[in-house]
Length: 410
Image (cartoon, rainbow, N blue to C red):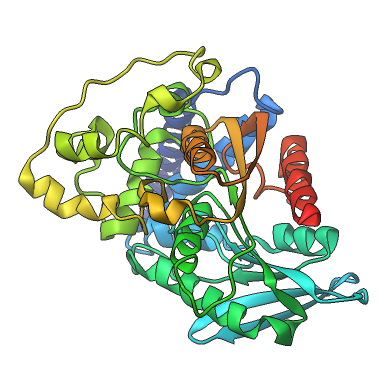
């Protein structure tokens, strides 16, 4: 009996040691394959944050292999966030706009007239995040800009794929625009906003709404390091920041495919640029070219990539990437010219930096007023970390204050 017990303890000790080695080894590998630029805001803290995110992903993978839950499900659960308590400056209420859950933030202070309204779409690669995750961001925007904010809980991939997220955001926006006065909002002063994947959704919904004659015109769009195209993953910012946390180049392509298809098939084709025919690339080259990126954003290195073709099978599987509702940068000129005043925030150490720069140029070339705020020491996701205690960054607070300033100027 004693021998059997001792053997069991030995097996358990070996299992625990192997588990620890696996976790530590995987985290070390992930960290050694990342790059923290010296110019980024608080590099040591960013490395710590990356370690936490990597550890969560590793643990999720282990639980998935044990059959306890999926890695995506575990990661989503860990970063779901929670609804905070009452706010002395805001009335906060959860509602349904049709079938879409939303959270409404209304300033408590009396207002002389109707307020501006901000419809906010959260980031998270179309796979993660929630209205709870973005509670601190939306509270700050509502209170500091004295705006009514609607945070939208759209469906997520991989269970729900394109265009489900876009359709939810469009439905919620349409509902709010029709009922704006019921919430003390001026229908002529509604702003569409979002960060990362949410910036993609805000841009796509805005393009749709400017062609809707039966609705009030969108007053402005506010795009925070948006993902606006899925054709070229070899732009300067992708090359320079490919391993900078918290969004790697490969992760971005993975999220794009999960949004489009619910799986990561053709990931290597997308990264290589062999997922679209050359003639399709040439068609959009005037809007999507590294030539349109200012020279100062290429000094950290850039190697142009020669266009290559693709197989018909791959193109048929991913051609939805070329639709403007998926890649707003590719919208028709007649639509772009109608877009409202725009605010675009970019971060230097972000793979999506050049998406924002390209859209900025496209809007300006079409006569659309653009306010651009660039965080020189910023990285992807720095805004969403606001209000998370020790994991907040000064650069994120500065970026958020620039957003509030823009809203107050409208």
